Length: 206
Image: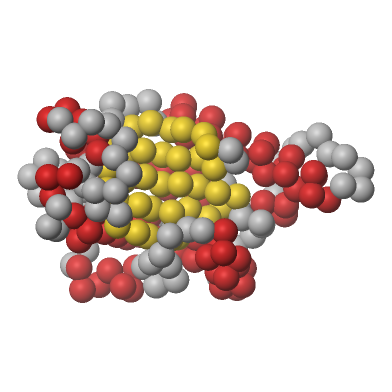
């Protein structure tokens, strides 16, 4: 059965607990009590094995985080070998890049059947690695300058709603629409297809 996003006027119900702001270190610290109150856990509470240094808490916390995020990265990479999708590492962060046409209908603002399968896979892995915050950021190409922010936020919210429907704790979510900012490809015909995307940046919850 093909997935359809619920009516827009219900999105706030699905996204209750999500933050509509950039996922900075400061915003994560501010959200931590809400996250823990909603059943969230810290990466140091997981069973992530790591080589620990007796008595050095900072070094041990870092080792646990690196090990935990490495395992997350490998699982995402193995599960998402599809055109238009990539998994990248940035320090301890893991970034999943989803080109719009790989997850959404070509001419309709909704998630495609292939996109639903991809997001189900991501949701399954996010549920397993639940000691994390993540930011869902939508981007457009430079051709959509007038409606760029609205279009990019629409994409990000649709992904957030989908993940919420698949039992992902919304207290972990930060959702933003960045319009045509931060292009990752040239603004030619092919590059614009790549710049229209959703990025899910995952960080350890500390």
